[in-house]
Amino acid sequence: MSCIHPDHVGGRALVMHDDFYSERQWLATQMHRDVLLDVYDEMLLTFPDGPGRTVRLLFPRGRGSAHFGDRERLALALLAPHLERLLMTIRTPPPEKEVPLTRRQREVLGLVRLGLANKQIAHQLDVSPGTVRKHLENAYGALGVQSRAAAVHAVFDPDRE
Image (cartoon, rainbow, N blue to C red):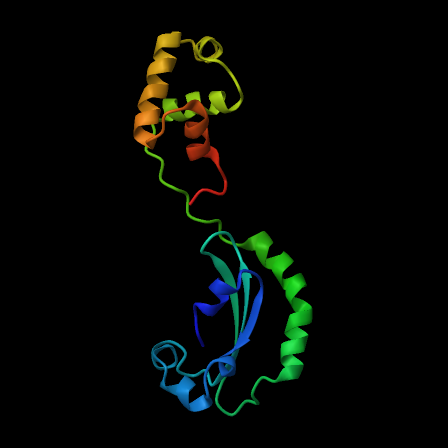
């Protein structure tokens, strides 16, 4: 089966290896020979999970089993929304982007995120406003940004890659 096809669909995908290959072609694929040696038929149900990520459910059948058909495809299509809801509650979160900041720089940016000015941050952390400014300057350099908003976005945006 074309492993990258579901990534290009943009939504939920339900594919079977015979959507792409004849049985003879499937048995000759590298995926079958190296990974799915005992799989002679399969259905794959995928759900998008953020940029470049999909959650995949593979339903294999071995030699001697009946091939998947329209009946199984329809049943899985009907179950897909329910399976998606369940899978998304237990999925593995995407890997965190490594942000090269000190604990104190993160703390300062967390307060910036709340809308506090440098003077308010300094008062809350019991440091001088100049120290807060220096922490921000160092954070900007480490993140490659030039503003408070860009720094907060780089550290706390949930959709970052």
